[in-house]
Length: 87
Image (cartoon, rainbow, N blue to C red; front, side):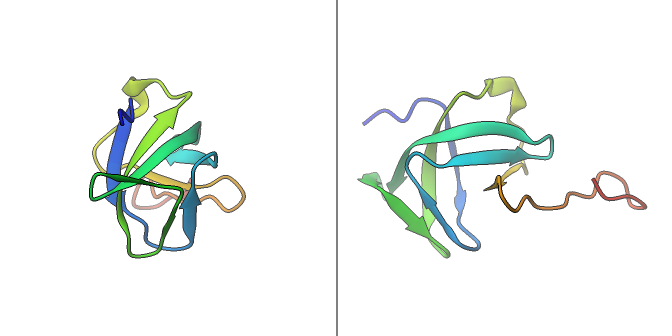
């Protein structure tokens, strides 16, 4: 299955499901989880500790950067953009 625009990483807390809306941080850009794969197999849900490939929809590829992260829209992470400030 082709995931299209894909990011890879570990789910650190909570869970991620197909259809979820997520924020790409820093920047707060919204995207929709189109599909999730673990070990090359499609799954509907990923939980804390899972290493996943996530297919995203509604996101311009130029918004992706090494070190970026996906987080909940309801509870976004705070991102340090300068040593003396928090976004």
